[in-house]
Image (tube, rainbow, N blue to C red; front, side, top):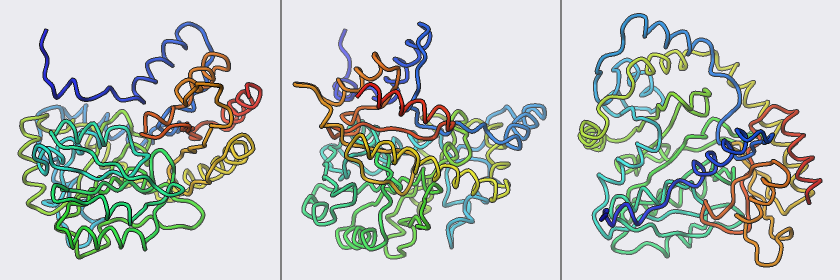
Length: 376
């Protein structure tokens, strides 16, 4: 059976693939502590659930506007000075946003610069658009702006920035983002800013959006999501903020790709925006406390850079690799012998590391690290 070269050129999401393995082991009766999960354990806020149920009861189950409910777009636009609802489009999660973005900005053989380690879908989404991902190493998990500049060619169309970063938890400082904005302006490049973890920044730091740099707003494409901040991963609601021209083209492709985002789920998203911010701040403070617990354990076991955002550690496990092992082997050994799931760094484009999520109940977090300690 002959399939397209395009689909043969990409790989299944490594994190999704790992989730299936964990589920299978759990069904076999093994107690798995899941440090691989990329979502907060807290329940979806009741206000979101109730608003979604009310929308269902009110028969909000029909087709809706392709770009999203006008009232939801208007509320989201308030985050972006000078923007209105025509600068916003809702999507079925950040992954769909990325897919559509690369489809509208890339031609075959174009290049997109991606700092690594990187979220698993960036490179595959670029390939699906017929373009080529160009990887630039980070320096201690921070941007190598000189390396990015040297990687720009006449085929470069965009630079992808993800801060706070998945998988490292790194938060990029303003000075580096200013350099990226300058480069984008000088070279007429798009900047795609994945800000899915933008709310989760610790230690008094501020997450800087690429939207802050007015000189590149016409070329800046901001991606955000309800999934992490509001524990709404299953709702699959992301959104893009960009120039009206970009939003128009994204709406065009979405009209053929999915049509509207789930109508009643958008009413849940409206309720999420009305939640008392103190509730969210408490969640963030709790995650910072768990970050400290997890880092204290991990830094005694591995070489580990302390993250300042998201909810991941990305330690170097090379000192614990057996002869001929890579991080995938290490993760499999840990899962099979200790029942602790982590994600190998190869999934994120870098070897000898694993990603550990600490967005778990504290007793599970402690139990998991005790198991890892025992195994090592």
